[in-house]
Image (cartoon, rainbow, N blue to C red; front, side, top):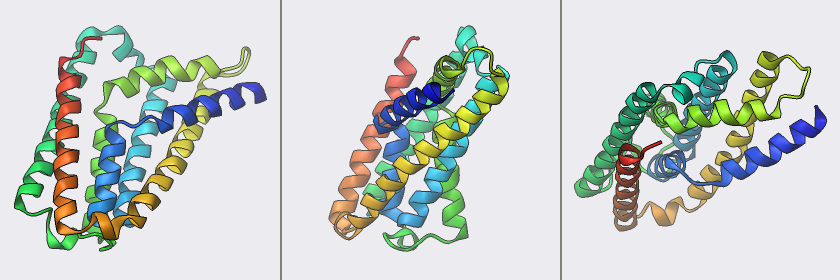
Length: 210
């Protein structure tokens, strides 16, 4: 079991380092609304990770791997979510970089924190690749003879914790650069870049065949 855990941790760390839609969203929220908002987005993302892990443990995400229709439906929905977030970012850039109550360092109130949590959760949960990845990746590290359901749940929690640790560093770095990145001109540029990236990721996901 120890060897499986070591191998899993190494693989999960490498996977966490690969940037994707969640990274873009978390950095954007951290710069726009401060570290607390960024951490709220991270927590939402990790709840999504746990949901996919639990789905893999009980066999639900196997449906995505087996059914092309189910995969395509979630793929289109996920693409729509990413494009919507991207268009909103571009619109915020055009308006001047976002509302005044969400400026860098604002800390985010209860409503702002909940909004960021939802953004992180939806970004992760609407990604069908996360489901296929969970059902194909996690079972590889279940030692022979061990209870599959229990081990998969433990690995799911560990996966989320590793993800949380990495994105915590990302949020801290984005917060440290907040004074520079939060300047109106720089912030508008960041909104444009994140908007274009999110739209591009959404279009790519929509056009991608499994």
